[in-house]
Image 1 (cartoon, rainbow, N blue to C red):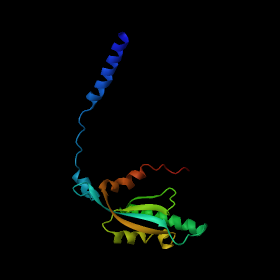
Image 2 (image 1 turned 135 degrees about the horizontal axis):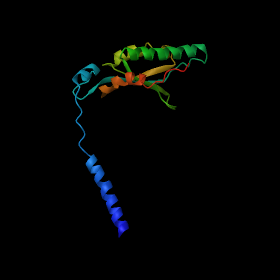
Image 3 (image 1 turned 45 degrees about the horizontal axis):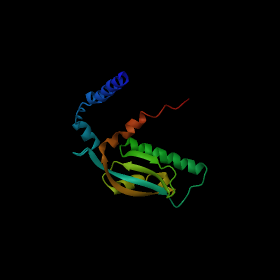
Image 4 (image 1 turned 90 degrees about the vertical axis):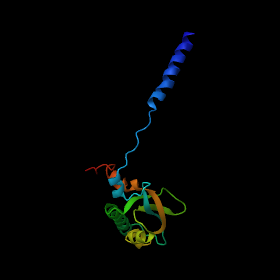
Length: 157
């Protein structure tokens, strides 16, 4: 009997703890200034253009020209990010369909995204081609570049 009593007491304690801890979460506070700064609509969303980078018609051979092309590609992404145009970018991990990477641009239309992508050395040299898709998502994506900077460890000497 003592064993069951102990089990019942433990079960009651464990069962009642989650009930006590389940208080209603605090309502998020709307930050009108932040919403305006990020370009959010009344749903906290905004327009973007998603760009899928695919293998292009011309592979730049290994060597200095290829290194320079990719150095320019990364410098271009950094510039566009600092200008507040590029919110997210990154490569795909091994895709047999030739998908190489993606960009998410904080621009209202595909034409502006095309102008921005046209400045990238991988596009200029034919290493990659771009596919454009209007996209509607959280305005919070606009904060990704600043958050990312806080996650990159300093270069080792």
